[in-house]
Amino acid sequence: MDSLDSSVIIAGQKFFILQGDRSHSLQWEKYGFKLECPQGAVSKDTEVAVTALAGGNFKVPKGTVLVSAVYAISVSKALLKPLVIELQHCVDLKNTSQTGCLKFVRAPLKSPNAYQFSIVEGGSFRVGKRYGSIKREQFCCMGIVAEMSNGDTPSDSESEEGYETPPEGSTDDTHNDSGNGAGETSERTASTINTGLSQESVTDDSNQKVQDVESTSGASNVSNESTEDEVKQKPNEDKGVTLLYTGMMYHKKKEVNQWMTTFSVVRDLEVLQQYLENKHSKAEQDGPFVIFKYNQPDGILQLCVQLACADLLIRKGASIDQQAIDGSTALHSASVVGSVSFIQLLLMNGANPNARDNDGRLPLHWATASRSVEALELLLKESQYNVDVTDGSDMTPLMWSCYNKNELIAKRLIELGADVHEKDTDGRTAAHWAAKRSDINMLKLILKPDMTYFKDVKGCTVMHVSAHEGFQAGVEYIMSLRPESVHDTDKMVTY
Image (spheres, rainbow, N blue to C red):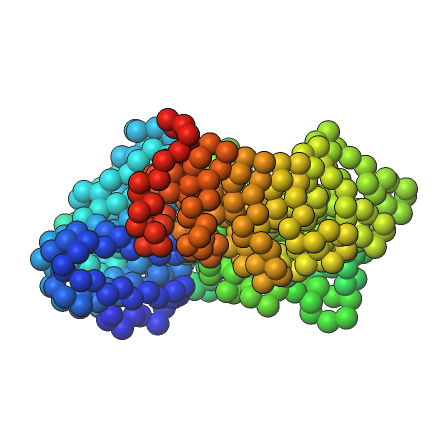
């Protein structure tokens, strides 16, 4: 890999070793990257190095905006055939006409035109899918842009001389300056904030990648006052193209009775989520990542610190275990977002950790949707049940973590003694649910060779489920454990 400019923000790096005598299907989904290598495309022991960039001084063609992370890709030997790469984007594609707004772009790594992107012909984008694919014989920096025509990204008609996309290798430097690349710019809440992969920076720090809205609250568990922040957003949306965003709240103790609360917003890309998690690795994560989009070009994002309100309601006599129409309580709601502070507040005031909703689910089951191990352990400690407690459908917390594709929680449940062989009322194991959700990391974590024989009430093994879902990586992994699983038979024509 060529040396990268000091201005770029590296989110992660991955190395793949390819063999020419067979095909390869390589996935780095935690960073939004996939690679398909057909048989005979490379020489023996060809190394592919991929660096995912969360930000940098990127310049994209006028009238476009970055909607993916940027990937610096290098190959150690000349290719014999093109490889297929797939990159994740953050555009909500609803119809075929919108797919034409997305384009792959490339840029050199070295001066004088480092990180000046030009459009690459070709590439495929599908409705309802968050990945675009393209065949390439040469690599450098790759990304995806969306063509826009609003005020933030001037259209051809707004430019004095217009703009033509330079061919690959062109030295044309007529680009928009995307100083923060695949991230965000930010200021205090009084100012307008661009939300991710924007064309212009609104702060002096060109390397700042995520929008952070910060507020300090008094008291370690309960804030003394409720605050409300309104942040004017100006997302780049035109031609029916809608961009997806991710928000997450973090709490970090600064000193006695003082916490720093940070709400971070980025484009909904795995690379940026990983960057956020690494950036706030020592902070308490308040709930799962929340994916959202703006209904209007000048949408408003409203943030409320609500812990003090909950404390006030409790002190005024609000019923702590009042059930909603689905039978859930406030503790269920706090658990599903993994808010340890809310959970502690409710438990401290007598909330029942053994309360079940209409489907027989405990707050512990709901907590498997969050990424807070601390919340999970707290609920398990306070509950009268063990780690394999079942709900009304005999689903265990481990099964629910598979359904929620929550590998972090699943690992902790297994460490705490969760039984991977448990079955629900339909005879499905946690492995069945991992296959149903097409989660290869979860399947590898849970599936044991003997479990490949397990059948649900329809006679379906995990191989049936994987094949039905089109889960190729799962099929290949199950075959590696038990090759004859390709001959499994069930009781039904379809799953």
